[in-house]
Length: 112
Image (cartoon, rainbow, N blue to C red; front, side):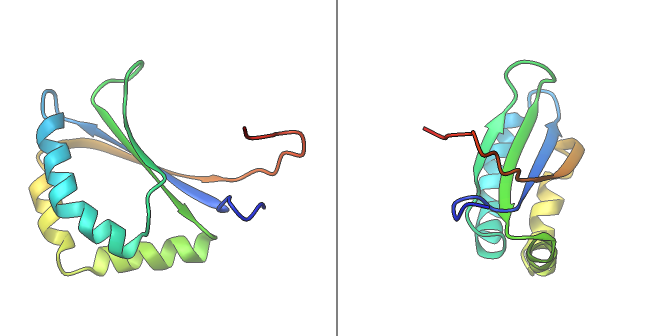
């Protein structure tokens, strides 16, 4: 792996209740982000769906390996303020999908 690429990415998709995306984003930013930055580190990015399934919020977090992922997730889940976010967002999220995707070294792949 190059020094810039983490081995694993947590690709997490939340489906948000119809017309509730602005409320969800406000709750996520206010209650979850301080905890996530403290426990998970710096996110790779945040996205909302444009084409395909609608009302989806996607966030990506990078990890060195599975042990790093598990350690940081345990820290997030054990954070004393995390239940407040879970309670505040429960009525806004209709589904969640979590994928762990693995980096692949491509000899001919040049990132410009």
